[in-house]
Amino acid sequence: MKTIRYAFWAIVGLCLILIGLANRGLVTVRAMPTPVADLLGISPDVQLPLFIVIFLGVGAGLMIGFLWEWVREHRVRAASRAKSRELDVLRREVQKLRGEAVGAKSSDDVLALLENAS
Image (cartoon, rainbow, N blue to C red; front, top):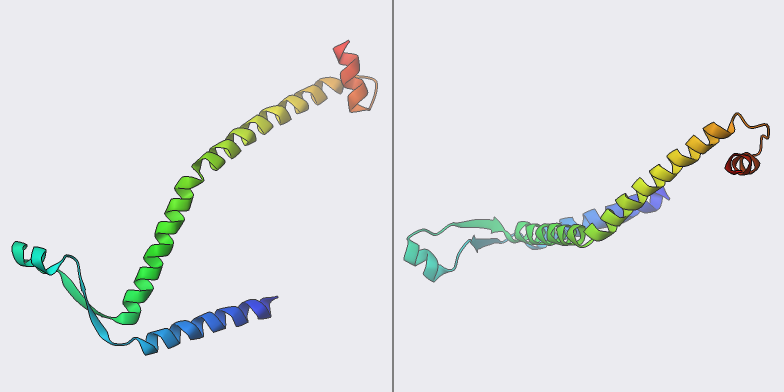
């Protein structure tokens, strides 16, 4: 299984290297449109190789997607926490009932609970 995993990551790495080599040309990345930059008198722009722009775009898309999914699953996580708290309460109650049943003559938990209930 490790061999398959290493082979997969080797192929991914090779693809990223090939994309980087094929897209080495410089591009200008501008923070705002040219008319707005001319109006304000500032032009925040950077020249980067195209593969860096591609990788940053993919990374930003992944981060936005992860954030979106995390926000979307809030209800599921809240319900899970509520069920976990309920389970903890029920476990403590069972332990308490088992502790009370220790003094009972029977070693069976069900019979001890029934004896205590009557």
